[in-house]
Image 1 (cartoon, rainbow, N blue to C red):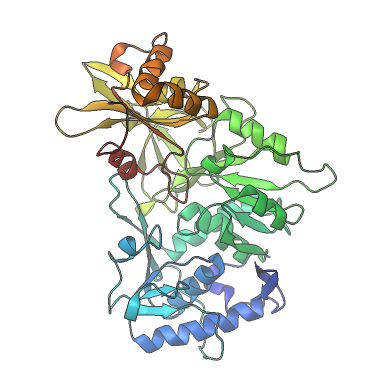
Image 2 (image 1 turned 45 degrees about the vertical axis):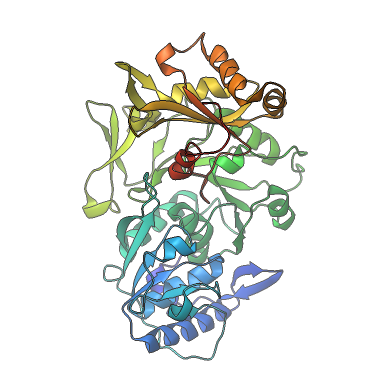
Length: 454
């Protein structure tokens, strides 16, 4: 049964209800309430009204999330728990709530599963409970996105109405971090509200996830992970197929089909962002499958082709402009055709970076590519290429410079000279964050030194 987060700790949910599977042991709702009570008491003892929540475990995050709100704190959620990121936020008046015992120094409130501290739970006022999410942003600097618990609950209600029946009894496992809003909702908070078991760790390797997953599980993944499913036999037909959700970027059509071949169902792609929440969903039965808006979500496209969305959980309930170019259908659905910042002017010509990446990825030498403008002085079109095995063989034979020239020759039948990358970097893997999104700063830094094809 779905229970709102604001009412969960004061609800009549049975103490024996499974919450999380940790190293083969199950944590029950009774365990969870006792740990949240102890943590709430320890937060109150600090006498603070703000705290930073960053954890390795999704179970620790869930307990810290509710304990912080019960202690009347505003919760700051950074995109990761790296020391450099935490340094932006953590201080004596804003301690770190975490299960990482060497983080935060003297300002750490440790989430260690202790019980014994008593705290009287009260139903929370969703509109008074405030949180600040932070995204890495295109520049790498944290960008603040405020949300109320009420907005979060509104979205979780919509997700439950849309997929709750399909997810009944499904244990959830994920390859994405709960520090990002997609992972937080689908991997952690939605199972908690629905009374379903979830696995708190972030699985980096598909084989480990599949070994842990019970039949009929829910997989929460990123497009980056779904494009790297290892060679494997399809799951047995007699085993209940998983439900797969993905978000964070476009999922290539071929990757959607490969996922269905391996696991059974097509992945459900959720389009959205930290700012907008979940906007729409689709399963790619063909390359032009449109996105269908989630209940309560409105869409429109302006004269430039930019998509805007509006719902109860966009800021102020107002229209929020995205950076995506879309073709809108009469029923409100839409087909994405690229990012606005994927179009640049070079030598007076309008160049699609997505098109450059697409044609690079068609090469047998390339697994994946990122094309972008390198600033500083004269702006230059550059490419970072994740090579295939064949590509690395060519790299060893001819070197980086000549390989860049060879790729330019492959692009020539489809792209103008202005759209040809002028500088190249070849990598084992494109730098991405825990959500599978490309890290622009890391991509830029590849051109500040090191071997390349300049």
